[in-house]
Amino acid sequence: MIDLGTLVTPLLHRFDTETAHELAIHSLALGLGGQAPKDVPALSTRTLGLRFPNPIGLAAGFDKDARAIRPLAKLGFGHIEAGTVTPRPQPGNPGPRLFRLVEDGAIINRMGFNGCGVDRFCRRLARLHRPMPNGRMRGPTVPLGVNIGINKTGSDPLRDYPDLVARVRPYADYITMNLSSPNTPGLRDLQSATMLKELLDAINTRNPERPPLLVKLAPDLDDSSYEPILEAAIEGGAQGLILTNTTIARPATLRDPAARESGGLSGRPLAPRSREVLRIVSGLNKGRLALISCGGIETGEDILARIRMGADMVQIYSSFVLQGPGILTRMKTELLDAMRRDGFETIADAHGIDRPN
Image 1: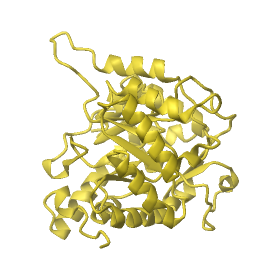
Image 2: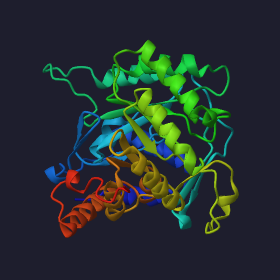
Image 3: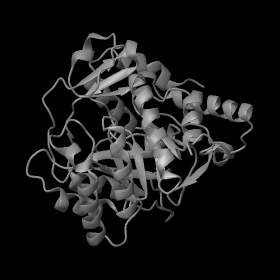
């Protein structure tokens, strides 16, 4: 069968990065993405009280406005995280604001939470749940996460995050608080243990019943900062952490001229720090919260290594953008091969066996 994604991805890369991204979303929304084969049972995993057909999710930032949820799910992701969605529409930062570093296997973005706002976002999610003519519910076909954030101006985090949870909770299987984008002034200050606990208390007061709540953290914190944040998340009733968002660091190994651009760096250069943060947090966590590892994941071996370190699942973004949808089939094949080699019949068998004591 012809892999349209493999054919189209090099053509998209002839356009500037943001134009290519818009074309990809538009094409997917029109149903041009294709259909991946059904996942084998060995890849299935359970966390957050949910069943996922495989442990590979699409990170937030690709489908910011929930325009292509079901087509993205059909490509073979185990879950989709839409957003980041903000209370009000906003244009984001001036362009150019999205850059491919192809030689480095990386992307730099300074988008600034551009998006349609929560009203339009929720209308799109509501359409996903409309019954079919036969009365059956369609839904997104895989678990759906919604990533929430605040506007650049006029925001009040203690008001906005609880309100956003209330708006998206009818449609989301889980919700992620984005406190770690480097492109919204002051946002990363909300990661402090004290502020995080206040935010979680406000969310729980406004939303006594809600889906699982996760917190997405930056890779640029001091190593010693993760323990109080973890404990605040647990005390505040969060169910998981996503490790990590993009970095403002610039490794000396970067070769692309675009490396000088400001913004958050994702992809291969982030992998060492992402692994290190997972190692630190997993050792402290000891299975209390679900952990999703994100940053520089390109192969099935990468996925198995993160699961062995204590990640329940992973998310990808840059490798998907740079290599196209075909990466999912390859990753799953490599993951299954690595599991068989190491004697694991299921994802659960591998989970946390290399977690620090």
